[in-house]
Length: 101
Image 1 (tube, one colour):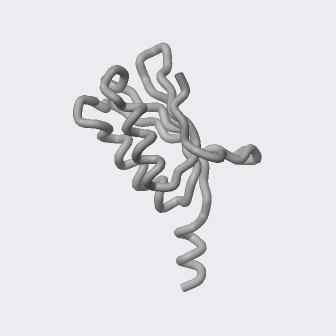
Image 2: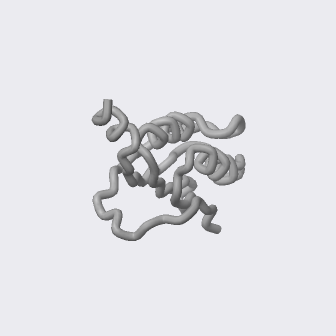
């Protein structure tokens, strides 16, 4: 039982690249709302190539839910591809989730 609980609470940090029609459709705004509801820390920003980049840190179980939401995004978004990379260097702690302009 303790090992299951430990696994659920294990903290991870991931970087997500979201490709498709994800700018100009409130993707960043909704990403922040979802991240806050799942107690995920980090940031989201638009990239020059039209994609969105996200740095997210939180319990593994919450990150899985977050990734599933990112695959779909808000109603006006059309996500074509999601690239998820686990970050190994997590020495700098994140305190909240923000939108980077």
